[in-house]
Length: 398
Image 1 (tube, rainbow, N blue to C red):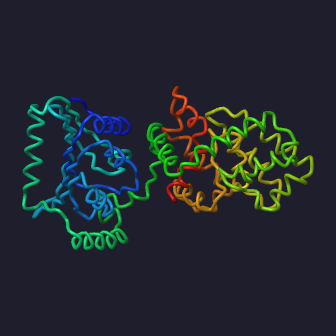
Image 2 (cartoon, rainbow, N blue to C red; image 1 turned 90 degrees about the horizontal axis):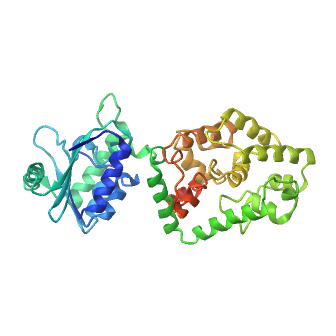
Image 3 (cartoon, helix red, strand yellow; image 1 turned 90 degrees about the vertical axis):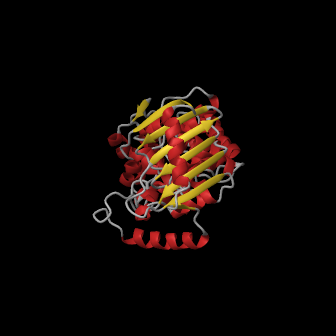
C-alpha cells in the first residue's frame, strides 16, 4: 500500500494505471467538465470504463455525463440516494488476474486531480487481494441498487436545466463544499511537462500543417535573424516580413497589417531603431529565472517608441527572439484565452504590466519549470514551449 498526497504524482500514477490495465470500475461523487483535459484524457488508454457517479448539489457537470454516455465502450449510472449523500471515491483497475485499487478523496474532476489537497491509498496486486474483492463487491452492490440508474434524455435535460440555474446563483457561503467554478480553472497553471507536451502534440494533430509551418518559422528565424540583430533586419523586406509575421511567416500572429507599426520598421529614425536593438540584445541574453524589473524597463522602452504601439505588436517580436520565455498576444482571440488564466480583461495584456503579469504566472507553472528533456522531439517543443501557447489555444478555438 502507498499513500499519495502530491497531485502531480497522483496524475502520473492514474495515467500509468490507465495504460497498464484494460478496465476501470469507478465510484465517484462527482465528475467534472470534460473541456478540462485532466483527468478525462487518461481514460483514452482503457478498453472499458464502468462508472457510477453522484449528482448531489448538482455538482457533476452535465457535459461529463454525456461524455461517458456517448462512448460506446463505457457504461455510466447515476446514483441518487433516498437519504444522505453519495460520496465515494474509488478507482479499480483490472487486467486478467492483475488489479490496482485507488481509494481516497479525489473526485473525477480537474480540482480533484490537480488543485485540491487530497490523499489517496494505492494498492497494487492481484484480483484475489481481499481489498480488491471487497471493492468489486461494493461496486456490484451499488450497480444493482435501486438507487442507481442509466439516465435517459428526459432526465439529462432536467438535470442540465437545474445545474445551470443553480450555478448562476450559487455562492460558497451557501454551498461550501461544491466546486461550481471548476470549468473556469485553467489547466495550464497546474499542468506537468508531460501534460503540456501532450497538449502541444494533440494540437498538432488537430492542425496537421501547423507542425511544418512552426518549424519553418523557427528555422527561418535562426537562419535570417542571426544574433546580434542589426538595423538591416528592420530595413530589408524579407527579414521585416519575418519579424512582423507577414506571409509566409504568419504563425505567432501577423502584425504587419498595422500601418504605423510596419512603417516604423521601414522608415523609423535610426535612434529609435537603436533603442529597439538594445532591447532585443537584452532579451536575447535573458537567463531564467528572469529579473522582471529589468524586463519591465526594457519592454517599456519598446512601448514608448511609437503612439499606439502595444504588446500585441511587440509581443510577437520578443516571442520570436525567446520562444522559451514569451508568448505572442497578437490576436484578440488569443488575448481572450490567455487573459482568463490570470482573471483579467483581455485588453490589459496590451500593456507592459498586464503582459508581464501573464508571463510571471506562466513561469511559475510546473511545465515551464521542468527539466530540459533529452528526447529530440520533446526538446524542440521545450525550447519553444511558451510560444506554443499560440498553437494550443488556436486549436482549442478551432
